[in-house]
Image 1 (cartoon, helix red, strand yellow):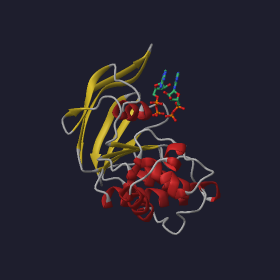
Image 2 (tube, protein in one colour; image 1 turned 30 degrees about the horizontal axis):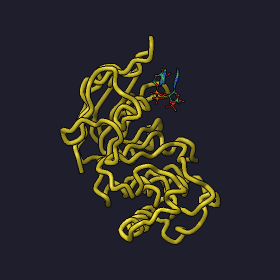
Image 3 (tube, protein in one colour; image 1 turned 120 degrees about the horizontal axis):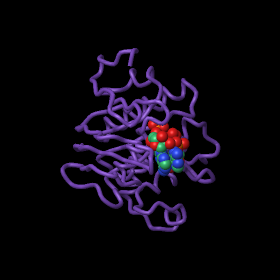
Image 4 (cartoon, protein in one colour; image 1 turned 60 degrees about the vertical axis):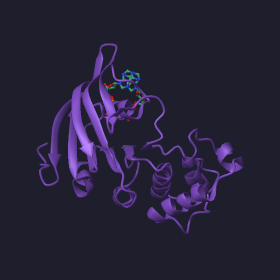
Length: 229
Ligand code: ADP
Ligand code: ADP
């Protein structure tokens, strides 16, 4: 578990202000980031995981600046970026590598601890029996669960998920969110998950941070999320 501190983060792209003076702190929580398309959710997650630099402001994890590559931050994407032709197990195992490459994961020698972690992570997302199935044979929801397992194998203290259920039907979306929440609890990671579906958010979130036009619109606890928002 860890503390993520976002302080006065502003990000501009030319004339576009994607984020404007956003500040919050998250500690040991399952937080949902809400906002319509274009609100700045991806930009915020990218500023946190280091894929982009804030124009001004700082991001720290447990007081340390988050600069360069961030093995302590696990990332889950809408497009899961899995290698479809190989097994769920091999995909999960690539999470143990700092530079994720399938070739490396197949040919590199993995120690037993890596292999055990990959299987444990697949068990967390309910896919132990399917560990040796090819990802291409799996449903969209199962594939996204493999993506969660891969992020867990890095043993992160913070997991970021960018619209992880946006391309799934409502049933699968609930299912995947359930596993994501379970994963965060079992592996004791702080999670920041962006969603645009308020009903799914309300079901799983412990705290909700809302963005609109790059600005922090609300920051509320479970039970305080009203439909008017
Ligand atoms: P969301 O994830 O909530 O849909 P984004 O963070 O993707 O929002 O986008 C926020 C705003 O910043 C939008 O106006 C978007 O067009 C703009 N934006 C995002 N990334 C870039 C970029 N690389 N270059 C220029 N504008 C960008
Ligand atoms: P999202 O699903 O978060 O809305 P987008 O489809 O807006 O994401 O953006 C996908 C990619 O394109 C991101 O890398 C983002 O930074 C970039 N991007 C978004 N808007 C713009 C823009 N107006 N100009 C250039 N790049 C952009």
